Image 1 (spheres, helix red, strand yellow):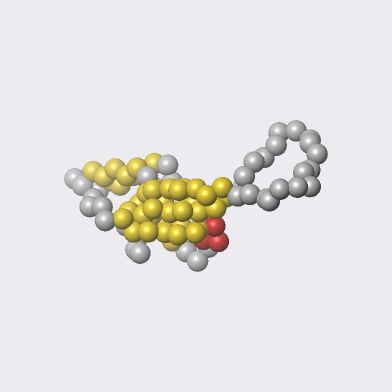
Image 2: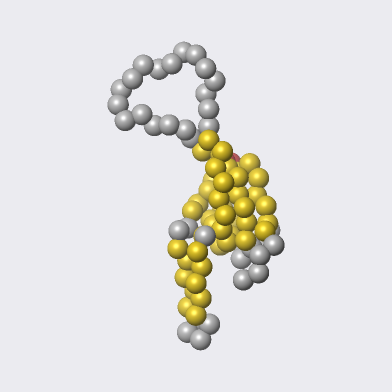
Length: 87
C-alpha cells in the first residue's frame, strides 16, 4: 500500500464513556467497537495511518486540499485493504 491509495480500514476502538459516576459491573465480557473507515491514504508511519475521505485538486493552480482527516493508531488496525479506485 502506498500514499495516495484508496483504502478501507477496519479498526478497534473503545466503547462507552459514562458521563456520571456509576457502579462498575462485575459481570459480562468487556467489549470494544469495530469501526470501518474509507479514505485516501495520505500519511503512514509505524505508529499510525492518516486517511482523508474528501480530496480536491486544482491542477492549474497546483492546489491540493483534503477534508475530514482521521489518524488511526496502527495498534488498533485489524485490517487495511487497498481499493481499486481511480482518481
